[in-house]
Image (cartoon, rainbow, N blue to C red; front, side):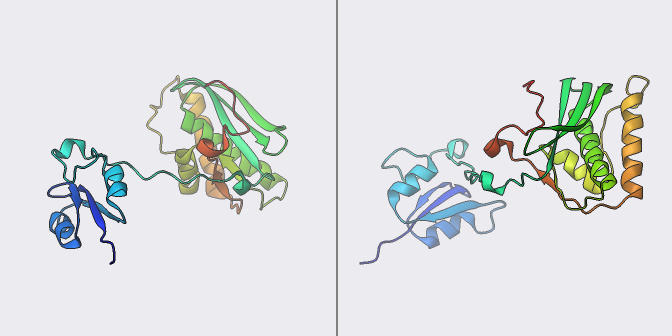
Amino acid sequence: MAKGKFYVVWKGIQPGIYTSWAECEAQVKGFPGARFKSFPSKAEAEVAFGSKPGSTTAKSTKSTGYRKKTEAPVSKDKIIWESISVDVGSRGNPGIVEYKGVDTKTGEILFSHGEIHIGTNNMGEFLAIVHGLAYLKERNDSTTPVYSDSRTAIKWVKDRKANSSLERSIKTEEMWMLIDRAEKWLATNQYKNPILKWETKHWGEIKADYGRK
Protein backbone atom coordinates (compact mmCIF):
# COMPACT_ATOMS: atom_id res chain seq x y z
CA MET A 1 0.00 0.00 0.00
CA ALA A 2 1.46 3.35 -1.00
CA LYS A 3 2.14 5.81 1.80
CA GLY A 4 0.42 9.18 1.61
CA LYS A 5 2.18 12.54 1.84
CA PHE A 6 1.86 15.09 4.62
CA TYR A 7 1.54 18.75 3.70
CA VAL A 8 2.89 21.53 5.92
CA VAL A 9 1.32 24.95 5.51
CA TRP A 10 3.44 27.64 7.19
CA LYS A 11 1.55 30.52 5.65
CA GLY A 12 -2.03 30.14 4.45
CA ILE A 13 -5.63 30.55 5.56
CA GLN A 14 -5.04 28.09 8.40
CA PRO A 15 -1.40 27.03 8.97
CA GLY A 16 -1.00 23.41 9.92
CA ILE A 17 -0.26 19.88 8.72
CA TYR A 18 -2.61 18.27 6.22
CA THR A 19 -2.89 14.72 4.91
CA SER A 20 -4.07 15.45 1.39
CA TRP A 21 -3.28 17.89 -1.37
CA ALA A 22 -6.92 18.92 -1.57
CA GLU A 23 -6.86 20.06 2.08
CA CYS A 24 -3.54 21.83 1.59
CA GLU A 25 -4.67 23.52 -1.61
CA ALA A 26 -7.75 24.86 0.12
CA GLN A 27 -5.49 26.70 2.59
CA VAL A 28 -3.01 28.18 0.11
CA LYS A 29 -4.85 28.73 -3.18
CA GLY A 30 -5.11 32.45 -3.81
CA PHE A 31 -3.41 33.26 -0.49
CA PRO A 32 -0.73 35.99 -0.99
CA GLY A 33 2.78 34.68 -0.24
CA ALA A 34 1.58 31.20 0.72
CA ARG A 35 4.28 28.85 2.02
CA PHE A 36 3.83 25.11 1.98
CA LYS A 37 5.67 21.87 1.26
CA SER A 38 5.01 18.14 1.18
CA PHE A 39 6.85 15.55 3.31
CA PRO A 40 6.95 11.74 3.04
CA SER A 41 6.24 11.13 6.74
CA LYS A 42 4.23 12.65 9.56
CA ALA A 43 7.34 12.89 11.75
CA GLU A 44 9.23 14.95 9.18
CA ALA A 45 6.22 17.19 8.69
CA GLU A 46 5.92 17.80 12.44
CA VAL A 47 9.60 18.66 12.74
CA ALA A 48 9.35 21.03 9.79
CA PHE A 49 6.25 22.69 11.12
CA GLY A 50 7.72 22.99 14.61
CA SER A 51 4.66 21.53 16.32
CA LYS A 52 4.53 19.18 19.30
CA PRO A 53 4.49 15.42 18.55
CA GLY A 54 0.98 14.24 17.76
CA SER A 55 -0.31 17.67 16.82
CA THR A 56 -1.53 18.03 13.25
CA THR A 57 -2.79 21.61 13.21
CA ALA A 58 -1.51 24.95 14.38
CA LYS A 59 -3.39 26.77 17.12
CA SER A 60 -2.08 30.19 16.19
CA THR A 61 -0.55 31.82 13.15
CA LYS A 62 1.86 33.61 15.52
CA SER A 63 3.83 30.44 16.18
CA THR A 64 3.86 28.59 12.88
CA GLY A 65 7.35 27.21 13.46
CA TYR A 66 8.43 28.28 9.97
CA ARG A 67 12.17 28.15 9.52
CA LYS A 68 14.16 29.54 6.65
CA LYS A 69 15.90 27.01 4.48
CA THR A 70 19.43 26.34 5.69
CA GLU A 71 22.01 27.84 3.36
CA ALA A 72 24.18 25.20 1.71
CA PRO A 73 27.89 25.43 2.61
CA VAL A 74 30.17 26.98 -0.01
CA SER A 75 33.29 24.85 -0.30
CA LYS A 76 36.72 26.47 -0.04
CA ASP A 77 37.45 24.68 -3.30
CA LYS A 78 35.47 27.52 -4.90
CA ILE A 79 38.06 30.12 -3.83
CA ILE A 80 40.21 31.47 -6.65
CA TRP A 81 43.53 31.89 -4.84
CA GLU A 82 45.20 33.73 -7.69
CA SER A 83 43.27 36.90 -6.88
CA ILE A 84 43.22 40.15 -4.93
CA SER A 85 41.24 40.50 -1.70
CA VAL A 86 40.28 43.92 -0.34
CA ASP A 87 38.92 45.03 2.99
CA VAL A 88 38.28 48.08 5.14
CA GLY A 89 39.48 48.96 8.60
CA SER A 90 37.26 51.48 10.37
CA ARG A 91 36.62 53.19 13.68
CA GLY A 92 32.92 53.91 13.72
CA ASN A 93 30.45 53.77 10.85
CA PRO A 94 30.54 56.54 9.73
CA GLY A 95 34.02 57.02 11.08
CA ILE A 96 37.70 56.93 10.19
CA VAL A 97 38.25 54.53 7.26
CA GLU A 98 41.29 52.91 5.70
CA TYR A 99 41.61 50.05 3.23
CA LYS A 100 44.07 47.66 1.65
CA GLY A 101 44.35 45.02 -1.05
CA VAL A 102 46.33 41.81 -0.60
CA ASP A 103 47.37 38.76 -2.56
CA THR A 104 44.68 36.26 -1.56
CA LYS A 105 47.11 33.35 -1.66
CA THR A 106 50.06 34.85 0.24
CA GLY A 107 48.52 37.74 2.18
CA GLU A 108 51.13 40.13 0.76
CA ILE A 109 49.89 43.73 0.81
CA LEU A 110 49.69 45.00 -2.77
CA PHE A 111 48.28 48.45 -2.09
CA SER A 112 46.73 50.42 0.74
CA HIS A 113 45.25 53.79 1.62
CA GLY A 114 45.77 55.44 4.97
CA GLU A 115 43.09 56.87 7.22
CA ILE A 116 40.32 58.88 5.59
CA HIS A 117 38.74 61.23 8.09
CA ILE A 118 35.04 60.37 7.84
CA GLY A 119 33.39 57.73 5.68
CA THR A 120 31.41 54.48 5.78
CA ASN A 121 32.49 50.87 5.50
CA ASN A 122 30.78 50.44 2.13
CA MET A 123 32.38 53.59 0.76
CA GLY A 124 35.78 52.27 1.82
CA GLU A 125 35.05 48.91 0.19
CA PHE A 126 33.98 50.70 -2.99
CA LEU A 127 37.27 52.61 -3.11
CA ALA A 128 39.24 49.43 -2.39
CA ILE A 129 37.61 47.48 -5.21
CA VAL A 130 38.15 50.30 -7.71
CA HIS A 131 41.76 50.64 -6.53
CA GLY A 132 42.16 46.90 -7.12
CA LEU A 133 40.78 47.18 -10.64
CA ALA A 134 43.07 50.13 -11.42
CA TYR A 135 46.04 48.23 -9.95
CA LEU A 136 45.36 45.29 -12.27
CA LYS A 137 44.74 47.49 -15.31
CA GLU A 138 48.12 49.19 -14.82
CA ARG A 139 49.66 45.71 -15.06
CA ASN A 140 47.65 44.77 -18.15
CA ASP A 141 45.95 42.05 -16.13
CA SER A 142 42.36 41.57 -17.26
CA THR A 143 41.70 38.15 -15.72
CA THR A 144 42.61 38.25 -12.02
CA PRO A 145 39.49 38.53 -9.82
CA VAL A 146 38.96 40.98 -6.96
CA TYR A 147 37.26 39.69 -3.80
CA SER A 148 35.24 41.86 -1.41
CA ASP A 149 32.97 40.85 1.47
CA SER A 150 30.59 43.77 0.81
CA ARG A 151 27.66 42.97 -1.50
CA THR A 152 26.69 46.64 -1.42
CA ALA A 153 30.09 47.88 -2.58
CA ILE A 154 30.24 45.23 -5.31
CA LYS A 155 26.87 46.44 -6.61
CA TRP A 156 28.01 50.06 -6.49
CA VAL A 157 31.09 49.25 -8.57
CA LYS A 158 29.03 47.35 -11.13
CA ASP A 159 26.60 50.29 -11.25
CA ARG A 160 29.63 52.64 -11.48
CA LYS A 161 28.08 54.77 -8.75
CA ALA A 162 28.54 54.85 -4.96
CA ASN A 163 24.96 55.25 -3.80
CA SER A 164 25.83 56.40 -0.28
CA SER A 165 23.58 58.54 1.89
CA LEU A 166 26.57 60.05 3.73
CA GLU A 167 26.13 63.82 3.84
CA ARG A 168 28.57 65.92 1.87
CA SER A 169 30.19 68.36 4.26
CA ILE A 170 33.56 69.75 5.24
CA LYS A 171 34.06 66.71 7.49
CA THR A 172 33.32 64.24 4.69
CA GLU A 173 35.00 66.21 1.91
CA GLU A 174 38.06 63.93 1.70
CA MET A 175 35.97 60.77 1.34
CA TRP A 176 33.67 62.28 -1.27
CA MET A 177 36.65 63.58 -3.26
CA LEU A 178 38.01 60.03 -3.42
CA ILE A 179 34.59 58.64 -4.32
CA ASP A 180 34.20 61.17 -7.14
CA ARG A 181 37.64 60.21 -8.45
CA ALA A 182 36.79 56.48 -8.30
CA GLU A 183 33.50 57.02 -10.12
CA LYS A 184 35.34 59.01 -12.80
CA TRP A 185 37.79 56.11 -13.22
CA LEU A 186 34.90 53.68 -13.66
CA ALA A 187 33.26 56.00 -16.18
CA THR A 188 36.39 56.29 -18.31
CA ASN A 189 37.89 52.80 -18.02
CA GLN A 190 36.77 49.34 -19.06
CA TYR A 191 37.69 46.20 -17.14
CA LYS A 192 37.03 42.47 -17.50
CA ASN A 193 38.24 41.33 -14.08
CA PRO A 194 35.53 39.48 -12.12
CA ILE A 195 34.43 41.13 -8.88
CA LEU A 196 33.54 38.32 -6.49
CA LYS A 197 31.83 38.05 -3.11
CA TRP A 198 34.02 36.60 -0.37
CA GLU A 199 31.82 34.11 1.52
CA THR A 200 32.84 34.97 5.09
CA LYS A 201 30.27 32.63 6.65
CA HIS A 202 31.82 29.63 4.93
CA TRP A 203 35.45 30.65 4.38
CA GLY A 204 36.28 32.77 7.42
CA GLU A 205 37.43 36.37 7.35
CA ILE A 206 38.68 37.74 4.06
CA LYS A 207 42.47 37.71 3.71
CA ALA A 208 42.69 41.52 3.82
CA ASP A 209 40.81 41.67 7.14
CA TYR A 210 42.15 44.15 9.71
CA GLY A 211 41.18 41.93 12.64
CA ARG A 212 39.22 44.64 14.44
CA LYS A 213 35.90 42.84 14.92
